[in-house]
Amino acid sequence: MSEASTTRTARALDLVPFLLENQGISVEELADEFRITQMQILEDLNLLFVCGLPGYSPLELIDMNFEDGYVTVSDPQVLDRPRKLSKPELTTLLVSLEVMKTMANPDVRQELEGLQVKLRAVLDLKPTIDVVVNEPADAKLDEILQAIVRGCAVEINYLSAHSDKESWRTIIPNRVYVEGKHTYIESWCITSQGERVFRLDRILAIRKSDQAFSAGVERSDHEPSDDYLLFVSDNARIFIEENSAVIANTEKISNGYEVLVTAIDQDWLVRTIAGFGPEIAVLNPPALKAALSGHLAAIRSLYQ
Amino acid sequence: MADNKTERLINLTLALLATKRYLKKSEIFRTVQGYDGTADSMDRMFERDKDDLRALGIEIQVGDLDPFFEDEPGYRISRSSYSLEIPNLSPREVAYLSVAANFWKDSALTPAAQSGIRKLKSLGIPAAMDLASTIEYRFENPKAALLEITEAIDELRQLEFEYQGSEVTKRKLAPYRVLLWNGYWYLVGLDLLKNEIRMFKLSRVIGEIRAVGKKNAFNIPSDFDIRSILPSTAEDARNLAQVSIKKGEALTLRSNGRRLSEGESTDLYEFRYDLPSSFLRTLVWYGESVEIIEPVQLRNEIIALVSGGKP
Image (cartoon, rainbow over all chains, first blue to last red; front, side, top):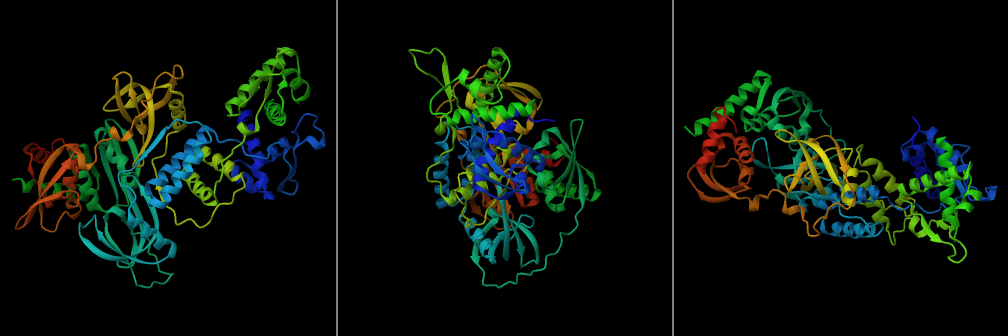
């Protein structure tokens, strides 16, 4: 399929100023950067090679060399500056910065806001995308991020979701991610000698650890976990939307979905689906079904 | 041929950028490579080329050459409207933008983010390498139409689509904002059939979202604040419930409520909530650790729920 000439024109116009700042880049890297094939890049370069200013003598053409697989530009003619950002480009960068602001500390937040002001001056653009999180930045997050940079351990007082108990643990945080409403910290938990994920809002307190650790901590693989097959009705669609991280497969059937849940603690799953009543039913395994009945019966007994 | 056309578009851009005065059409046809054929066909070619360049965001200025002797307009592209100028962009800011551009993994926003950051990198400002460890964001994958929706908002054009609520319905909307709320994408606007501000989950839109009708078809209130239409947060939820919690249990739940009194084996807490169904799901999660005391209706609902009834 041949691409639209406007797409190609835009890319060619952007190639020249990019090359000026990246003299000697290989065709391979260039293809990677522009997310097209090396063949396409070579075609673009060959095209630019014959373009230039009226007159089209050697002195008026864009002059570049790429014979040895590395690209240099010796005369860009008038294409020495990048083009103005387009509306989609500006929109996308602004919303990314908006997302970064949600988790940033006040200093960084201010820097990001200043950057947004500079970008908005490029083009007149209405606000089109808003970003809202219900669990905004938290001072504890900064301590975690610093621990990651320094590669050191911290002690956290953690309220466990599974056991609903609090305890002090020593962890080496590896990575922070935001998913849905919450912020999670992937860590090596020294206390339980395993990889654990902690939710930021469940960390009640944090303090520096004096525990030294060796860089070569042995990592165990995740324990194999069972697969659970559920029927989820159309009305309980929110279960699928909120738990996509543990859903391996979803299949639409009449008036609902067959959902395969995996890599999750059975007790957590029981507690989570119990509140949906008949809108979610266990298809397999029987053990999950029994645990669910038990959970419901325990609540029933409270009210009798 | 597509290639001839691309070559002509590039040459036209260069010629119009290089000129300080306006170029007449006849000059363009004579000097810019790629224009040939009859006068009519060159005219049609040139009109299409101008449209194509404008679609790329390249602004072509049209001006009179000399009002006394010529009636033919002239054309040029001004350097300042063509090129990206961001004064005082610091290496740290370039580094932030590189992080920002890499958010979108492989999604509808990736191409725009990548081409945007390439232009910024072409400004020749090095990126600072000392940014603190960064956070990964895991969003719902944005729908392909996301940027078209933002374009419709920018141009004030109405949107039409089919939406999966409790049943599938046709919607017509004056779009106000796209919203990324707790990792999920929504479309917010004035529902033109119901004449109310409504919020739609983008993943529940079925098929295409079509921009219909003219530009500037409506106004977005300048004081529109997305937070005013979001479901209320815990602090200002309308409903109140009293729940008894066993000693030392449901610690997470406790942190979201207010303790009213302490008993022998249980404590009494007060909670605010919005949607009964969602509050019930939370309480059921804690099993026999919690018991609803009032309101009676909620108590009856949980009994029905755990007895196999509807939530």
